[in-house]
Length: 186
Image (tube, rainbow, N blue to C red; front, top):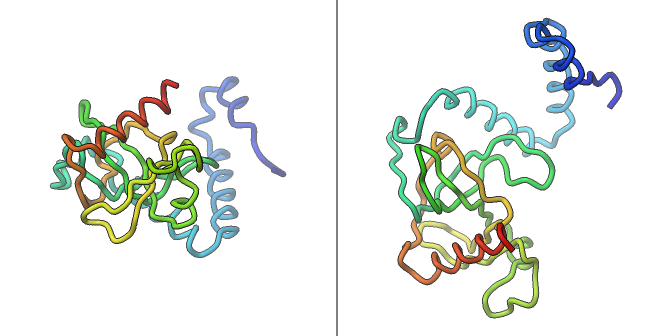
């Protein structure tokens, strides 16, 4: 990108860099240009994630928002701003584990094209291995697919709402955990 500062070089060479007006102005300029280049839908998602971060970043957990999650909950989550090929912005996610106010979540989508490309148990040899068809989940309006390669721990303050639940003692949850494990540790 033209006029792009090499942030990593400035960081290594100068501790005062973080306090400089130059980096502040460069960030504001580049971010405005970036937002203007986006479609209305994409800009909205970017801005919503930014506002959520500003409002929630100092919270220790979702319990401070009166949202009390448990393993197996399907939640609407703000995964935040992203790099290419990462799950981000506002999506559903399945809570697989909770450790010290953080949840290990499996991002999901109801995008019909993504759903078609995903593996499902009846045709495991076809489809993309990093996607897994979950089918219909109580509380959601569409069939869902999971991004097995995008699991991560998040601060539970990123959780906006609990929308459904998958029984942790059921076959589907066990299959999901097995598929996640196989995806992370092939």
